[in-house]
Image (cartoon, rainbow, N blue to C red; front, side):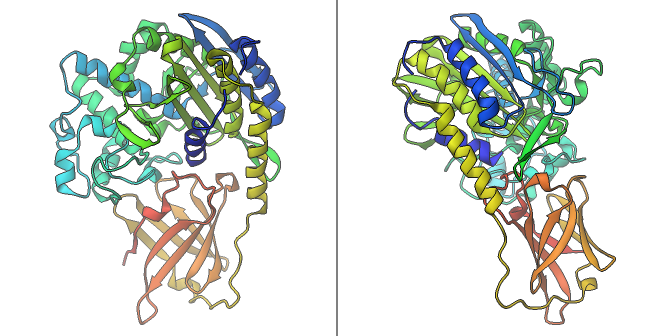
Amino acid sequence: MQRFLITLVSMLFSGAILNASASPTNAAREAATKSLEAFNVPGLAVVIVHNGEVVLAEGFGVRDIASEALVTADTLFGIASNTKAFTTAALAKLVSDNKLSWDDPVVRYLPEFRLSDPQRSAELTIRDLVSHRSGLGLGAGDLMIWPNTDKTTSDIIASLAHVPLKDGLREKFNYNNLMFVVAGEVIARVSGMPYSNYIEQQFLQPLGMTNTYVGYSNIPVENTNRAVGTIEYQGELHRFGLDYIEDFRAAGAMAANVNDLGKWLIDNLENPPEQNWNLTTPIRDGMGYGLGWFVKQQHGVKHVYHSGGILGMLSLTTLIPEKNFGMVVLSNQQAFGALTAVTQEALEQVLDVPDRDWVADEQKKYQASMREKLLFSIEQPDNIRPALPLRAYVGTYRDPWYGDVTVRARDGKLLIDFAHTELLTGELKHYNGDTFIIRWAEPLLEADAFIDFAADRENRVNSATIEAAAPFTDFSFDFHNLKLMKQE
């Protein structure tokens, strides 16, 4: 998620958006077609609505590099964090029904809710949950949901009391998914039905979004028109077929297609959720976060937008309320520049601003990021201290919010397994002294990390910390928040 969020924030600050010689639909269509090759993207889907009508809903390229089946306007994609707007719309509905207030404390509805600071636990409000100002750090606790884990919502809420806080309450913006997981549980408690059922009853069914699902497991087996994620790694595309991160729940577990998302855009523009679109948490230069949406003023109009990212799949939603315009771009590859280019080329027509070749400009950035990954390596220190005997590191290490991480020896190697996360298994390669590098069995995670063991005076290893090795590792791999204590 990190690369998508950071790119989103910077991209929607940068300059120019096109002359009025072409329509937004033609501009988007042309940019999407070019982007397939420019960004090595297998497939895209785009929907544009204007003045209450869908003016474009189309697929480009293939939804699965294995089958080469084409993307259509009915192809399902994981929309990831674009789910957050549905969550805040649900909260707004409960507010309008006088069932809760934005400024009610969370503990009124979830008495068991705790953060690591008791006063913070008592003061945190519903509004705080969905505006990224709780004081938890960027992505703090995400390892409980990313990649998919076996943890339940109850497990996650119980563990929050042990996730470290970074800042004061309402002090600054720190993007955090787990607070939206909590918001989903508030919706369930107040409405008396599961979060997914409430979203279906209040939004999907009334809007006729019959091919949108809350949770990958709810997609009918016979619906095979699904995009499969891909990741460009070492110059080649690799198929990465995850289940759209069902663990993200109210933070990002929805699957949808552009035909249905057109209905969602029209509803937002015709019945604007003004409370959700008001800036709540400033970020910089007049840009900030509302409730489930980023907001900013640019070119004299308000922009309401959000990105979504899971491993192998991206989405970007943009609304210009003053122009009664909205669009969504979906992709089954992690090249966010492609979504940026398609969106900005369309916006140039809507906002009548100077022309810019967004595909070419974003392609350069994407190629630079791919080169950075190819050239990245972990340099060995000049003087390498030996490790302790491997058996010294073997054991079960426990973190109070994640749980157990096991280190074991086999065939002269050290192996590591995260108890709740099937994908987090790998081998420890010695680096220096009591520091090893975790090489994950699945290299497409791009999340290799340092693990630093600590020993007492008798060389008995008693704890470990972990930190991602590469600057481009997704922030949801929040290894640095783990405090692993060896169990006797």
